[in-house]
Amino acid sequence: MTKPTVQDLLKRINYIEADIDIRKQILFAIPSDQRAEMEKTIADIAAKKKEIEALRQQIKEMDPEEHKRIVAFEEAVATFKQLAAGRKFVSVTGRNIGETCFLSLYDGSAVECLVKACDEQGDWMIITPDGILQQYPKMMVAEKPTQPPVH
Image (cartoon, rainbow, N blue to C red; front, side):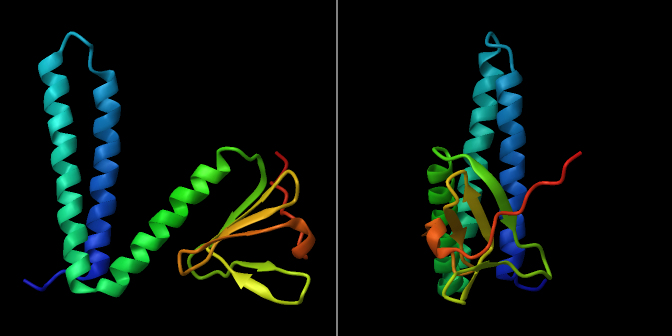
């Protein structure tokens, strides 16, 4: 059998994370008088989390640079979510496979991004492909937010 690649391990982690989400939903659906079933489900979730940690460790050993990039990206996403909780976005655009995503600035440059979001005040927040969270005030950004389609 061939040795798994970093991509294989990441796919496995995504699968396990989806499984954990399902188990959490199951946990909330278990009647409160079924303590043993709740404890079993909690133990299953804990085991899955340990499995994810083991896979992350494998990635770190296989490719430390890729591991560092993944951690940076996860931290940027967590910070993005935290900052987004206090803002109302009028536009959020993410890069799809095979497409590009740039934020156009008034100085003529463009910043490559994976996600860009514009809030009600016209300020922008992006995550770069390197996993860096950046914020731009509206006075620096040349583009206008995309409007969602009207249904």
